[in-house]
Amino acid sequence: MNKQLYINEIQVLFDDVQRARIFEDQKMMTDAVPMFPVSEINAEYEKKKGNEGFDLKDFVMTNFDFLGARVSIRRDEQLPIEQHIEKLWDELTRTAYEEKGTLLKLPKPYIVPGGRFNEFFYWDSYFIMLGLQVSGRTEMMENIIENCSYLIQNVGFVPNASRTHFLSRSQPPYFSLMLDLLFETTGDESIYIKYHDTLEKEYAFWMNGEEWLENDSSVKRVAKTKDGDVLNRYYDAENAPRPESYLIDIEDSENTGEEFYRNIRSACESGWDFSSRWFADGEYIQTIETLNIAEVDLNSLLWHLEKTLAKSSALQNLTEKENYFTERAARRRQMINTYFWDENTECFKDYHLKKHKNTPSEHIAALYPLFLELADAQQAEAVAKIIAEKFLYQGGLVTTTKNSGQQWDLPNAWAPYQWLGFKAMKNYGYDELAEKIKNNWCGNVERVYSNTGKLMEKYNALDTETIAGGGEYPNQDGFGWTNGVYLKLKQN
Image 1 (tube, one colour):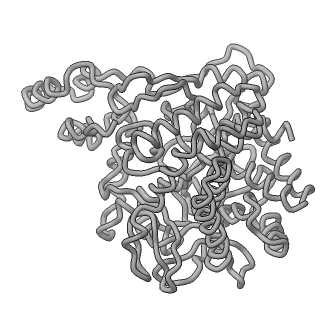
Image 2: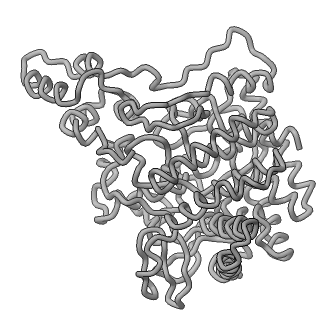
């Protein structure tokens, strides 16, 4: 599982291919499967590359298999949207019982997002599960959980996605919420006991290095404030260009600090790649400073993981562990209030670990304390007001109030936050606002589907007549989490 990344074994060829821009999408080369032993391909390349008339693209196409690099969905007729999604579940189902190229093996079938994303993604899978629940596909929900558990047990965490070049980072930790969703579906509480050890291992990954921390310092995914409180941050173990966006990172890195690549990769662990949320100046990716930020979403999710560990310990009469995790959860709940609630703007915000204050970015991750019922009534009322005034548009909830050209900024609406927004408002009795979030976004999805026959990765919340854009690649269709959230919202 932790084998050397094969991309490193073809580094010269890989570097040449990406710099030559022979593919429009740099992810193509990372997903390619060598058809011959890598040593033979390298030797052949060294021998031929200096020859007159050498064609790099032809060489690559001869030596690598690109089948399955993209999920293609075609329809002769446009079905009603729910029927289309039911067919999509089957079309987006994959198996990987053995490793191929960069693709990691997994024990169970799984659902891929779609488009250029033809592998298992961590946090996407939770939102996919919402739709699988509605579709009555409980076995696939169980498969997803089993795959996550397998990765945690064998790698130590769930990678960003199931490829070798993601073995340096995870994504928002949704495993404990996946268990809740399966329990809600089956009523079988024994799943918490079955996966107790997996929950502990994931928690250990996120808290790794805590014991080495001094006040006002950070290591890996943990940070200790100047007052000695432990918070978490997103982090990536590597400080090099991302293979899947190789040339983009190299070009963006000019005139940046020494940890630019790690800041880029750490933002990818959040799932928000990219957003003005991470930029020191709020404008340019060159000022990215993810490592200086403790995030409200991550710390809220880890509170849920601590609560779940207390529950799974209690079910097994592990009193000492139950007390430990109950105390950790209670302490984190206080810290979420102390560090992430901004009294001045009356909203939840990220915390800047170096400046010892909240970051200025207004973003939709403020929903997490309401989604997980961590906020008090006054906080919920203030956040609901801000959501209604600043984030809700005719096409759904936007992610930030800033239009930077990045895909995780205004004007884009992403499926996960429509569900989080709907559920957050329902939790505190703002039913009318919840309905508006649901109807605005679902209406947008239906309109685009009617016009294009596609379910998209993201949507334009302001101009519902256009396809959403921004970011490093075109808007993708398929699309796992959109399908899941749409079905779940329509059911509620």
